[in-house]
Image (tube, rainbow, N blue to C red):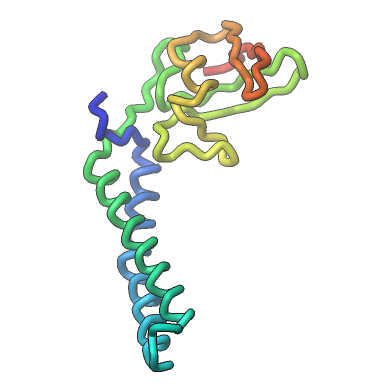
Length: 156
């Protein structure tokens, strides 16, 4: 993988494009209006509203630049089944053997990782441990505290 490639699902790419469009067409206009309103207060040397709007503008422009680069360098992850082998794009159900707890994750590129939505990065400790593994295998992953956690792969 090239270092500037953004591994992403087709769905994730559409979400990035949607966010980019929202920032360009809506957010830029909103910030422009905030700056105009703040300028109407007069002296900008001690104008908190103006400073806040300019900071927000800088953050939005930085996000736009980042999203444009990610979209430009996007490499769509093909979600094909590989005989029960975990790969990027796979939906995996695992079981924490210590707590007898089941979880389901989709392995995605880091650009669209969101653990709260069940999407974990291929470069996260759990994501890395799952890649290339098969249905029924037991894997060990080091927790942030340094403990080893055992998981069984239930479905791929």
